[in-house]
Length: 95
Image (cartoon, rainbow, N blue to C red; front, side, top):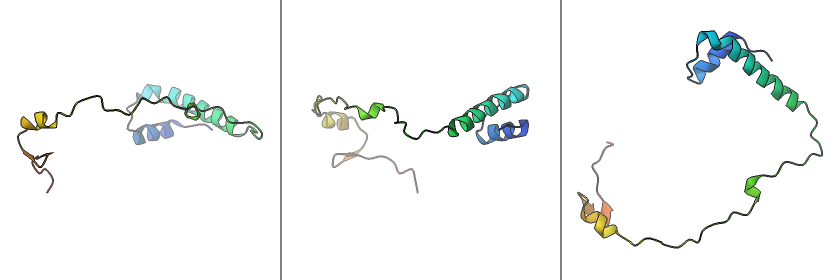
């Protein structure tokens, strides 16, 4: 598949990319090459080929879920401008 300069400019506009006009032709060639590679790859017969391993298939080592810090809510709320029933009060910003 071959992309034209107009198509590259349209793609750049949709992606909100600023590209130099002197680079459009080389970008068109590069993108066309990538699309040709994808076309070749999609034409390959992959029947009987197992998928590659995925890192998420491994068991994840997790840290113990324990509290490591002390509760300092009263200390922090003591310096807050407004607090009520353990909650911080803030000005309304949306009507």
